[in-house]
Every structure is written in C-alpha cells, then in structure tokens.
Image 1 (spheres, rainbow, N blue to C red):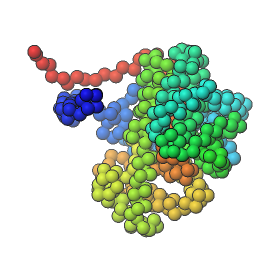
Image 2 (image 1 turned 180 degrees about the vertical axis):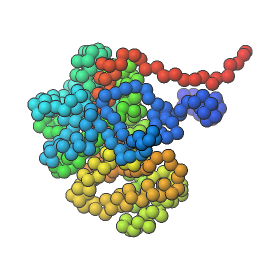
Image 3 (image 1 turned 180 degrees about the horizontal axis):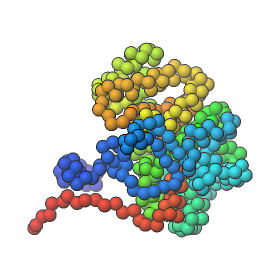
Image 4 (image 1 turned 60 degrees about the horizontal axis):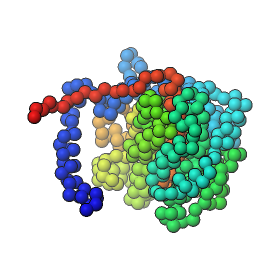
Length: 445
C-alpha cells in the first residue's frame, strides 16, 4: 500500500489531534498580553526593528491622541506621491526608484543611466537554464516556479554563500534583473505544456525599461503602447516597498539575520508573498468584480451597486465571507496614497482600452463601499480602497494573465526585499529571535 492510500486511513484522526492540541484560546492571549499576528486591536504592528528605507504615515498626534489622517508613504525620505509625479511623463521610473531604495539616495542622471545599463546587462540566465529549469515540471503556480529558479540560480554562483556587502549587492541586482524573465518564462512554459498553447521565449532588449521588457517578453507580437508600459511602470514603483513591516519583508530580514544566503532569503520572501493573505489580494478583487458585473445591470445606478455591496458584506453574495475585497488596509485609515496615485493612471488606461464603463463601476464602489462598511461594521479606523483595488483591473486591461498577478508583485518587491537584506547585514548584526510564552501543561508519566 502506497503512502497516499495509507494516509487516507489516518487523515481524520491526525487532523482531530492537531485541532485538539494546537488550539490556544483567546483568553490566554489576553491574560499574557500577547498580540495575535504581532498586531494590537487597532491593527498596529509590534515594533521589531528600525529602518531607514521607508515609512508609512496613517495617523497624526493631536493633544496626545492619535487621529486618522490621509496616508503617506515615504521612500528614503521622499514622499512617494511627489516622487512618482517627478518622473517625466515620457520616461520610466523603475530603475531610478530601485537605485533610491537600494542605495539611500536619489541617483544623479549619470548614476541613473549607469544603473539602468547594469540592470539591463543582468537580464541573462545561465546557458540552457530556461530549458533545463524553468520549462521542466511547469506549473500553474508561477510563484513556486520562480522560487525553484531562484534556489537553482545559487548553484550557478561561485560565491553563493558569501555575505559581504559587495557580493550581496551583486546578487540582489542580478535577481532584480532576472525576475521579469523568471516570471514570464515560467508562465509561457505553463501555457505551453499544461494548456497546449503556443510558447514564445523572447529575449529581453537591453534598450528597454523593466516595464517595457516585461510586456515585450509576455506578448507573442512583442508590441505594446507607451501608456501600457507607463502604467505598469507606475504599478511596479508603487509595489516596490511598503514600510518594512509587511510579512514578506520581515521574512527577508529574519532569514538574513540567521546568516543565510541571498537566494535562500529571497526564496523565503517569495513563499511568504504568495500567501493569499499577502500578495494575492488583487486576485480576490478581480473575482469579486466579476461577480458584481454578473449581478449588477446598471453600473451607473449607485443604489443598485450599493444594494449588492450590502449583500456581499452581509455574507449573502460572492464568496459569503462578508468582505468587500480591496477595501481597507492593516495600516492606512483614511486613504492609501498608492491607490490615489495609481487611480489617475488607471483612468487614462481605461480610456485607451475603451473600458470607461468598468471604470465607472470601480469609481462607484470606491465611493460607496466605505460608507456601507462604516454602517454595518464596528471599525476602529477609517476604511478606504487600497492599491490592490485597482491593480488587478490594470493587469486585466494589459492582458496579463491571472497567474502572473502575484509574480508581477514580486518583480517589484524584490527591490524592497533587497534593500532590507542589505540594511540587516550592514546595520543589525544579531539574529532575530522572537519569544513565545509557553502555555503547555506539564504532564507526568
């Protein structure tokens, strides 16, 4: 009898034992003052370190009290709203923003050009790597495919385990360069071997920006409009980094603090990001929007839209979990600055793609959902749309398949992870070792 057949005999028993012996009641968390998920009742994270890379503002102090305010996100001292708007209209900002996050200063024009050329030069995989690694055992889970590729790249690095700053910078920059290839090639392999579609493996063009290269490699005809690449470039900039307290960035720092290598640290971050509570939020928004389109006849009728949103919130529609996806954030209260920046670009793309009617639906939901949530829920802070509310819509308009939504998030976030890995190596030095209070009952034989 094989393992799977044998396992079927014990499934129910082992599940029951785990549930019985691994459940810790809420009363004990309160008794010992321990916050579930390292977050208090207001959603604030427990401080676990210091960083000079980014910052989030969601409250201001008035008369000794925290008052919700419009959210702000800072990259190395620069307000992200101002930073994104400073990128010339006919230019791309991924490389410039990556330099800022990694090295702590805005690049000079010469440094920006030099860095962009270095990133472009790094878009090269080892000989036969695409065939022997990416195409082998193709999977719909592109995040797993990329993680396998990241760990395999260590085998091609003669200094894979060296953690001196110069070597780690080299490794991180190379991963920033090849991430678009790992994502797109992983998808094409899946599309060919699992879905019987044609496969296209386009080599990257060193003259293109990261956003342009990604679209070019993804599309059979290699064609894209400037606006398409511009909107994707903005999305990548806004997803690069987020305050240092998110799950995958913390994972990067925890693994880095142990002395592990770059490839292991980034693979661990990938495993965190792929979780549906972290990087997969935009997919749930898209599924919800498809459901709303199927049940709302007139997107301009706010009463009809509000009625169906109420049904979703009451657990009577969509996935019956009582959540309006894309609304609210663990940190932001009145607004997510990334969503506010992104919305203008989304609107422009919706016009080019003749999706103004869908844009109207999104706009109405953005207006109505916070009001309905405030009416039906007891909340401790404001509720507003987050960046994931629009990102899935953008990816859909760009013709990006759902399987690549979270991998594209990773293409951006590899920059933030790399910045935090470097900061951990340079400035921290101690292994991160959290404490758990044991509530185990002592037994005698």
